[in-house]
Image 1: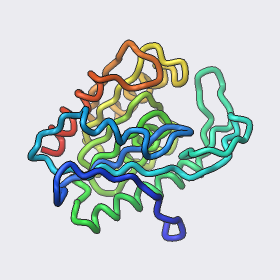
Image 2: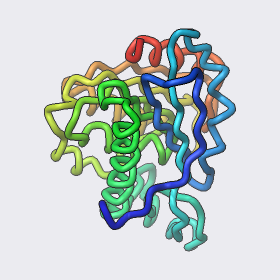
Image 3: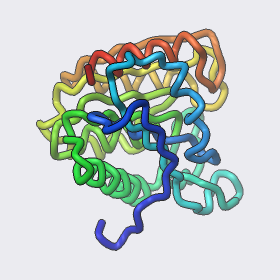
Length: 224
């Protein structure tokens, strides 16, 4: 982890001297600017001072996209029906990068108990994995239109986040990450004992205004 460079990030603070942080991970081929415009739509309470951290994933070749170099949290070798064959070492590297960002928030005065990991699609896959494997309790996990990239890795999950609340949401018409994968992920995480809120929306591979309001309420609840 010490050999990995700190990821560049877009940051938005909802008020001076933030007392909580949300590290929000973009999807395959996007970047940290992707969800920054969503912050006002969350309608967080004025009294809740949050630092939103939107990191840019590394540029890597993605095998299932003909080796095209793009921002990605890990490589996907191929699709087998709906299953994604993710590179396990790449997922581990991404988890290490997110731990660096968590540690930086700790250094800036925000404890793990005031940090939420959020992500969309590939970013949500890392939010799930990094959150459940983190050695200190986090405030919550938000997993949007996503799946578990390497389910076997969750055998290494820690007791610290055994009851961390999770918000999972998915589009019922998603052609990129079929909703079956989202359902499987939230059912497995709920089976670990985590309280999971599961929501479906009539949309494709995206987010919608009611979903953003729901995320805002979740953040206000776990960080308030």
